[in-house]
Length: 452
Image 1 (cartoon, rainbow, N blue to C red):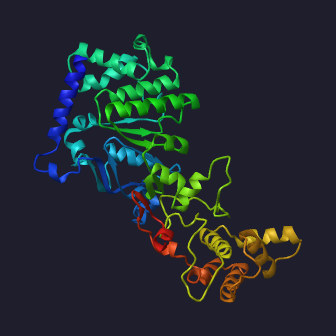
Image 2 (tube, rainbow, N blue to C red; image 1 turned 180 degrees about the vertical axis):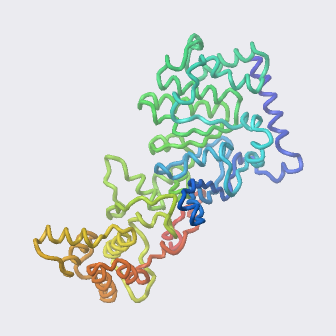
Image 3 (spheres, one colour; image 1 turned 60 degrees about the vertical axis):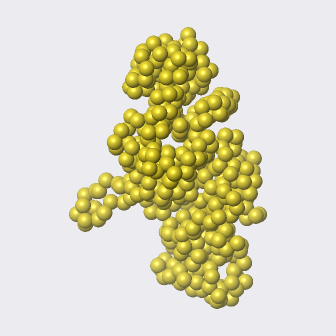
């Protein structure tokens, strides 16, 4: 108990001196982390051809213009598909990666500057728990040495006090002190994750970044770890940034939920609002993607378009290539029924991505009808493949579409795309939707929200 008092006093004093007295009034003391327009890009290595042609290397936009806050004592859940930038975001907040643009403020101070001037001091205030406990624990160290290592590095108290602190932490995460001389290989996955949590708590941090800490565990063990994290948060008044693919886990632990897609935030809201009244179509898809549910939105089948690459994200709204409710064109000369529009838009995307190859279409026609190639058969195959009715309800749209299909049947894919490029252009392709306010604490980046 004596070491607890010593650590508490030293930590509190260090925290207060981190904020200059001249700026205390300017800082929202309820906000622990503030992220403003954060970008993190990675550049591919330049090949010989790139070097010879003086071409700039491609950039992977892992995190692209993200802004949000984490309040003291709250859990912000982050969800999204693999590759959306969740882990990169966490590591940039921790100062493990330098941001390309934008800032991360921790208690009002720039994280990049704190890490550059004194990484050890910042590490006492923010820690991370990784996905795989086996890969982040040194197999050559005993559990006692693993948990005590942060205390040794930061020279927290004399050695006897450090050992007392280790025993206290081990018991707090639900393990027995007689296991302290064992090695990580002798523990189960759940026990190793408890050791990782104990090590993260050793320096009495204010923020824990939890990068899918339960995904490698059995369901029963997951529940135990989640309950432990909840108890620890209340006891130590911790703030969590919790990353997970498991929506049930996110709902159980998070106060607010942030949904990411291709490096951007598409929706952020209180947990119950996200799960009961999602505003963004991507959020709706995530919520409907459980095995027990069919992925439909407003009765419309979710489109199975290719997932874009963060190396070359679509212009406008990055989700428009997969969105089942993409906004129709604002061209007054063409009017679409929504089902017709989605089918025609899918045809346009297939043309743009090269997935409609005239040679393959010809082979398909010959297999189906056992006839030689002709324009009519290719047009019919394309309409059937994309779900386009034989005749669109709008005569002007039908005329434009027929011109495009005729060019495609003649093998001229470029002209086929040019025919529909203007009349069939969605506002979602032209405009990157701003993050719009919906209700208190609820924001979404979708043109549907803006139009409503």
